[in-house]
Each structure stands twice: as structure tokens, then as C-alpha cells.
Image 1 (cartoon, rainbow, N blue to C red):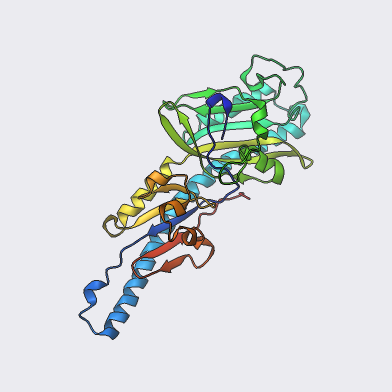
Image 2 (cartoon, rainbow, N blue to C red):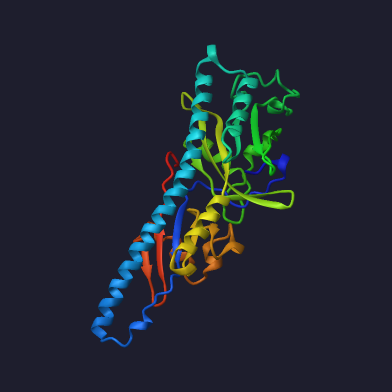
Length: 319
């Protein structure tokens, strides 16, 4: 998510369900049966191909379930935060004050070490109608020229949880990047659709380190009126580790595993790390476009030298 206070640079953002493209470029070991009769060779090759396909499917499914479970767990936290805030918005008698809700958001990230950040952003007077009262307030959640309530907590590189002030105008940046996605898609998606959104991965720099994240959020609605969003960010380094493990687990490391976004961008990969957050077509010019769509079709494809298998990931509640 792009936030001016962190000088973050959004590289890709769009509504997306992330999926796994697993076991790309598995070398087929059929040459050794050439001394057999053509009939036996054909039968053996077919059996071997079926066995390879079955193993690839089983391994990809297992690792895909781990990845989907991680994302769905984070989305449930986002949904819980959404429910608490919407209850506060609709029950003024028991509504949380800004300080109380701000503290709650901080506790969410403290108690969930896998989260990179947790947040709630609101439209002008979208929470309590007290923006004028909070203009130029000292509290970080309202420290802006409008008095707008925006609460953002993040985890630092050394594991500390800190809160930072937010530039209230960054929510509405609609300049498009090279992939045609708006700079503030993380906010505008939920505003436009009034549906939960999972964003394309993006990168930002903290010191000398660049971290890849995705954000999962939901709109805050009162009588179907959009009031803001609540959500969480998670780092994708665990997905990189899982793709590498999958590659090493198959055929002596000859398999290649790549995690793609729905837009076809490389999120994690055992062999294409230098192309992270670039389209698969950049790493595989001849096959990238076809393989980016494989999860929508037969999910399995083979040519003269390679076997390809795609395993979709399902994210609950995501549009």
C-alpha cells in the first residue's frame, strides 16, 4: 500500500485472487526407454506421464492449501475488524471513541505476528462526524489538516509495532501504473465495488530492504453507504519459501514452482526471483501468456519437453 509517510512505491495493485502455477518445466525422462518397442514405449510413456501428473497435482494441491490457508486466516482477521467497526458505526450508544478504536487496531497487529500492518481509513466525517473537532490534533490517528480519522499500525523490521500518521489525500490517487492499475487501488477498490478486495502484490522499501506485500480489506458500510475500509497487510516471503520447497521436493529439484497473481505477475518463484512482480511473460516469453491463463482452462499442459500444472488458490470473501 502506498503511504507517503513511508515513501512507499506501489508497483502493482488490482482486485485479484492469487493462484499457484506449480511445477513448471519438469524434465521428462522418457529417453531411456527408446530401446523398447514403439508400442511398449508409447504405453510406458503414457503411464509415466500420468504418474508425473498425479504427483505434481498432489504436491501442488498440498502447498496451495498452505498458501490459501495463510491468506484466508489473514482475511478472517480483516473481516473481524470490519465487523467490530461496523457495529460501532451503527450503534452510537456503545460506539468506540477514536482512541479506543485506534488502540484496538494496534492490538490486532500485536497479537498476530504474521501481519505486516493493520488499518482503518475513513471518508471525511465517516466515523464519528467529529473531523472539525480533531483538526490539527496531536493524536496520530487524526493528525492531518482535515481532522480525518485514519488509523495505521505497522510492524518494523526488528518486530516492533508502531503507529504512523497518514496523508488523508493518498486514498484518492488515481494515476495508473504500467499495468493500468490505480495508485490507490487499495482504497478505491472497496469504495467502488463495496466488496472485500485482495490486492495485487506490491513492494516498498524499509531501509536497505525491499518487502513484498499484499493487502486484504473490506468496505465499511452503513445502510450501504461507504464510510471507509478496514484491513491488513501481509508479507509474501513465506510464499517464496514455499515455492522453493516445492521445487526441491520434486524430481531432485528439477521442478520449477511459481506463484502468480491473477494479473499474471510473479509473486514468488523458485527460479525466477529476479523477475518478482513482473509478468510471467518477462521470464517465459514463449509460454508466459499461455501459462498465465492455465488455471482458467484445463490446468494441465505438456509439450515435447515439459509438463505444466496450475493449481488455483481460493480466497474466502474476496471479490
